[in-house]
Length: 561
DNA sequence: GAGGGCCCGCTATTCTGTTC
DNA sequence: GAACAGAATAGCGGGCCCTC
Image 1 (cartoon, chains in turn green, purple, red):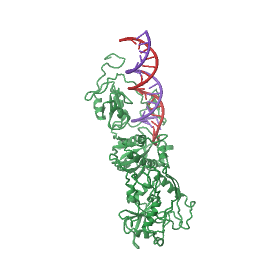
Image 2 (spheres, helix red, strand yellow; image 1 turned 180 degrees about the vertical axis):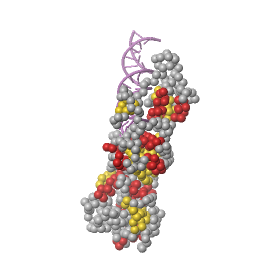
Image 3 (tube, chains in turn green, blue, orange; image 1 turned 90 degrees about the vertical axis):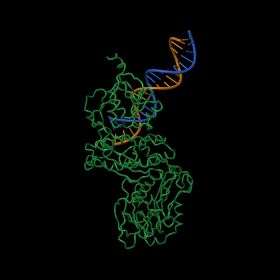
Image 4 (cartoon, helix red, strand yellow; image 1 turned 60 degrees about the horizontal axis):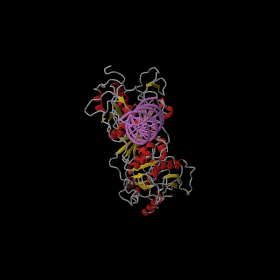
């Protein structure tokens, strides 16, 4: 593929690529970076094609179409609110791509006119291109090098640029990506394509030029395009019941137990269709040993100056508010967040969560296992630093988007689970006991935890709970989903009252306790099919205070004995 | 290691068919 | 109808997955 485009001519991008259309994978790309003879100089710019190729790989294999905007925003972007005028003391905000920031997230920042990394005088190369914007808001997306205004004067006409854009994409394709083939929408209609402001008034003109901070060579290329809003609004019918936004979350912790703490957290905010809107990352001082440093790499020294969780709870809450929490094995991340918020005497504004493992199972993805790395590999998403919260969240966000698209196309009901804030919990390991049968050591030497193995219930099963009546000793009770009282505390109280805790639901189960009876878990599904009575946690807590003694007493004993 | 959900294998129970 | 054997079904719980 070779492209030539720009508002004023002269400028150009040549991006040869080898793309496997059947698999939707970009196999190879190179960028012609020099503007002095048309000779590839890969060696000199070896880091640039590699980085660009990696960004394109993520974006392309993630189910999205590679746009010129993605090319342009690969590393740096400049935003001007109006076209620079000669002599005007304008300055332009410069956005630089951050470490671990994907192309889509980076592209979103200058669009949203967020805080730039730098402000630069607007008198450099690019003013001529700026004038071409005709006084409209424009986005400049410079790469290394710039374009001389003189060259820019010999611009090809709009129709030429339109043809160049056509040439950037296959006319027809057998590629099956979640978003459909790159050249056409799923309904067969040609996808909207960017054009210059002169051709497509009403669209936001985006053009690029400039000189990158590391540039050592002469003028190279600039990129011109428009925000392809029509393409962004995919024609795929979208289920009305789907959430309006998602927060892809990953936390690193000091361990897995109830008393373990968060040491870092990352959030990628996605819109209704899974497109990245923003992202955020922070370290957290756990006020204790950092736990498995060999996993997350965060030492006591690194975390010493990090904020405490209560100090970041508000910002994190803003990132989560009104969105469905998405995580890989979401129960883990949510339980850690819920406990941290409970310790901080606050509540996480999360009402629902979505586990990407459950979603993968719903989609029947052909994965060897359900680890994050397998899901990432399935979509061709490259992990840079496994167990770095920001990179894990990015990887998951990239992998979640095509999964969401597949689910939408299939009209799948998303496996959403209700999130219950924690109001009562036990913190800290159980007091040390002797290493008797039933107690097992944790991975940290010196602490002991009680086994969850409980003795058999001494009372026979009196049958199912009847609505409006009381619980009877021996009834088999199963729990499903979040409870505001720590699950283990709840189960302990049930056992003390003479109830039997069942780990699964069968026809003999007396009662299912869940705060989310509509959730698609196996227990609620089985309870529905068996006609098992279902009550919520609050009702159960009330019933628990008046459990009727078993009619015949304990098994193997005489009544009253 | 903890913990919730899920899967699968073992065991118990029920059903069916056969024989007396 | 009783007794038995074999097949079918149901229930339970151990172990696995996945996160740090």
